[in-house]
Image 1 (tube, rainbow, N blue to C red):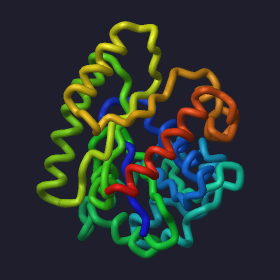
Image 2: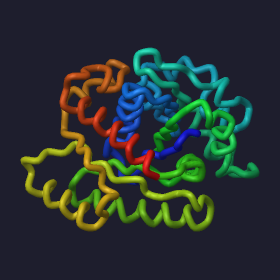
Image 3: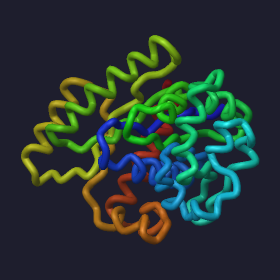
Image 4: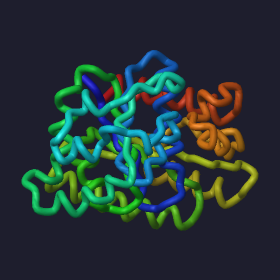
Length: 256
């Protein structure tokens, strides 16, 4: 049965989409069956997986409005090695349309339950705001993976996210927990980043993943080619770090 994880952080620009597509590609490389769900109307995870969001006949929008199933709407990314439930600008309209619907925050959970035996991992790329879309992701997830830059403002954003997760855990999804914090865009030469990293480990202990994703030009270049960095340049330090992170995820899920 699939383990469902949201990749979330209420602070923008921390590498959520980069983490989602590269973790997915890393998991596929180590033999896992993976579905990426793009819950961001910008559709960056869709494009970054080699699928043109402008050509989508069916998307996560149709799944949330229950006019399509996941099996009908998903596409396989040949280059990246995993399936994608894509998103485009249509998804922005789902916010308004879902407001008056029944079970509005559980639509995605219902849809994914039909394919839970087809995958080992489902990774959900959430938008940075706490919206109805993010809530749908959090309601169906077993846990949250939090990508974090090691800088001061990131710590403030993290406290907001922890409070949100506590609220969803208490009211909507008792299974929800933080699986781990992933340090991304890390530069060990910067003293502040090392200090924040030490603070994270002191406060969150084993919730901080051992894997660290370095700041890496090849990871940044990869989306312009419509590929995860793990596929675009497998020999780069960033790609190797994500494959190691995928292995750590498999180990951590095995011990849950």
